Image 1: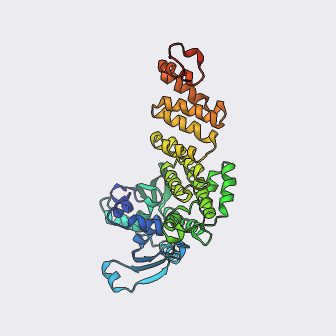
Image 2: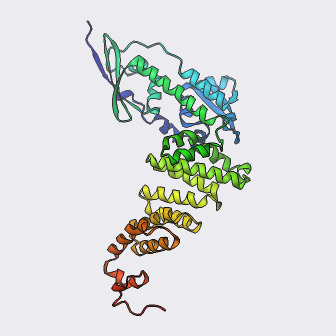
Image 3: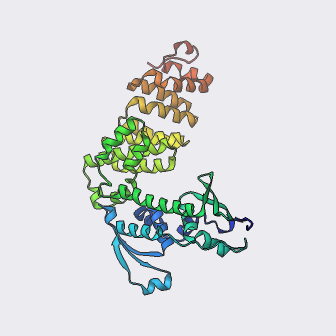
Length: 381
């Protein structure tokens, strides 16, 4: 019986490889937006070199991808191929899910190249794309077992099972994107379904229904067709994006939520959905701890006629967070005057009065606190 061998995988971890390459490519973000970040990474892993893109802004899946296969020398000699984006993704997945023969484990723990070949270079590169951090490998008479951290949780797999798991992730990514980017990718009918899901508190369903919208809509907005989109369609798109952005905020993915809500603002303009979109953006910024940035969108929501009970308390809290206590008190007063229930703004008012302290007496006659007006001078008439 041979003794078990233990290998540290620190020397062959590939965490962040895709992001580091991205820093050297000027068009990196644009390519990620069009192709999908993981599929752009898949292209690099399989050796597919994208030479040109002809973007179909109406149906992104019909975008034409020109590419060659192989390293620099092979790519120069190979003939460029042109396929739709959907077919390009399918080919990448087909190449990545092919099973590879497992090379025997190295005998020495210093044999880095042997260790890479044993695990599989393809799998070393796929691992961080799906949240796996490689820790160690144990080789004994039962085979090879790999220890990983997956989204911070320790997990252990037989090497063959781990490789199969990564291939499954690749297939699932293709299925997920195919569902979202198909002919119904921007199906405005989904907004009604998303509204029902949001009303029921099913934020995951909202993301499932509308999660594929932001990238193609960001591209479409910059086209002449996007600029000429009718008011009703723009309003529906803005409503859908605002639901999606708020769903992301519910999952505490604040950066993504704010980005989507800012895109919703661009579609909403000053239309019928604008007040609610600005209100959602301001509330998202406030929840993310950016109270100063939240004030502008919330005030814009007020100006556009947002529902008082939804916007004035948020604006009051934003002012309180920034230490603008008098403005918070004024928001509490204005909110009640606009029709918001007094109890919805009671805490804002009480906190503002408490923080103003003695200074509040100078303003008490403006807010109906007659008992505090003894030394405030004449009341303006």
